[in-house]
Length: 535
Image (cartoon, rainbow, N blue to C red; front, side):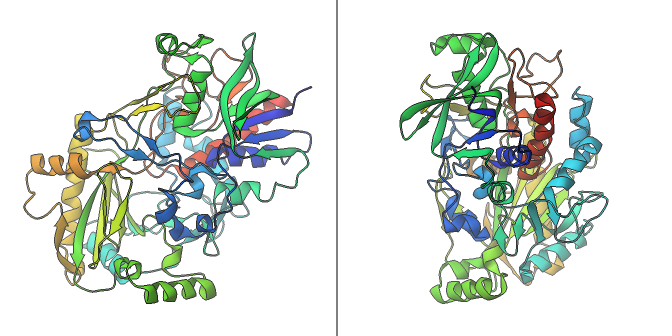
């Protein structure tokens, strides 16, 4: 007798969507295993809580290996360790990426993964505040809302970008991504709409759903080439659960780690760790991609930035009251208020640069594990290349599942990545010099006016840049002829029956934007694939 029809390992963006949808069918028994706690911390549900929780115990706090591309620095990689996963601690920005990203997946041999194929899943997930349209849905579990704060410096930046030649774009998830405008956030009525709130809260009383938190999966149980369940630790006590189908939704770090711990991956690496080889799959843990960002900071001539809120109890009380009574104001912001998507060079087919502009300024430590907001008024603009060509890997440090794996991003190893981000810094500076921004710009603080040549800008990027928290690709989806493909277009792990991966790790290439909306879409599509297999 199995414990469930389906075990979902990981209660993050994709895992919650998958679990919620599967449990809608009363005939399907679902067990969700999440290594972190329930999402009871009140800061999770306040959008501005992002700035607190991203580096809190609600994160795995992974740390990369020393990376030569960024001057030998290691980098903290926060990933959500709580129901909702990274959707409970992320910056809330709702971006799907470009249609061309998904059409490229299809061109790589992944049938059913073109944008036309996936749009119904994006729409099914969404409750778009602006209403239903050809490209947007209403009535879905995931709240998508307009920003509830229009800051004068943000308005000035939009006007400055227009003066620099970039069109205003009211919807980055519309017919075109190019241009400047306000981001939409995964919020509803001024509260975070995490995947746990969206998909699990309505499902928790279903008798066919069991949710186990503080449950760390340590191995997929495989018998005669078929996954039959999962071994896990709960408060240090070992348990096993068995099911007809097992789906890994741990994300780009945890999913490949669990495959490796289970003997699925590159044979040489598994033998080095003393793990019996169940299935030699060269691509497990390879193909790691992430968005690497660099931040330009300016002093502001007026004391109207978020810095002043951070350093004034009176202003914090005022902002809190505005949220309490109106569900608006600075409490409702995410990790970016205004966005810009543009080309680093005219020769690029589609926008390859993404910006996050905010009327706040701060310093990060070298490894990104702490943040200090400046006492003086300031604002910042971050830029990242959307489709990096630099690839890294995830590998085991130990056969003990309680150890974090080794993570090597290999940032900026590709010349294309280096050229694009240097061009991106120059574009950010040019916009700041436009007439609309002049009343607010009190001088460039970082990297500083003395940094002018391409080499000097690249040196700054290597020394001060960091992750924007979008790792993908480590359980790559691909056709039979792709030796680095881990799963097929139905998300089945090659050579193992009854086992799938459904999360951002299956992305063959990184999408042009923030990854949460796409991860939720993957969970939605996976639910249909698993449901069909169980029928």
